[in-house]
Image 1: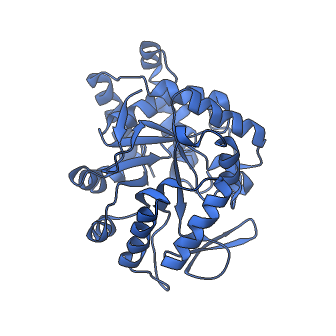
Image 2 (image 1 turned 180 degrees about the horizontal axis):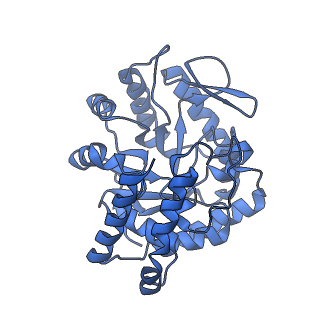
Length: 330
């Protein structure tokens, strides 16, 4: 599998990473068998997916705990990323959302992110994190200056508790502000062939500053696999609820597009999901694609995508098809 550098950190990673949001379970994703999740992480490492990404809020600590169990005795083989800023211990920061009996706040204060890091280290059973992301950025009524946040993150780097700094769900001005106060190596943003906002400003900005991009939701919560049809009923509160491409009229457009790619699946001996991930990887030399999985078979399918090299004409065809439905979606 092709590899990329994570910003200027000196860390090298395959172009596919494993996301563990679903492993956290809860009302977002439904309950899991943790032993199956651990086997999925083992499978990822065995097949060359060495970047494992999690966050405290995924299952309110549960995802981190499962990842920690899976990586016991294997820590040196893994690029491990987690996040800070979303906390439910107290009312510090700005209210973000409520879920599963927890009120969640955005807290990017030095005290808050230090607390989050120490809690993550305990749950993950490790003494350092390779990449620590700020999960969501500070907002009113309790904003924290990026200078304060970055100062604490750089302090954590000097202490050896983190190796690289990342930021998730950011805009261009926030990225530029981070760069004023230290080294920002990677951003994590939503990006798929039907959600292309990243391409307009953030991707060129990151390429100019040698900042890597870790793209999440490349399959639009499973829609771009083509395995979920029009008969699927989205349950209130689940991760697909109120998502643009899961609205029936938009879902129909996606499924019709995918139905026209049967010849590409045959040509590359791949699934539709493989094609969508391979397309995302090919959009920039700077991208790592974060593929969620909680079963071994899902991991194995994601790995196949990392070895597909799409021909230029096929890339253009897929891009044109996606552009067309983006233009007529509601």
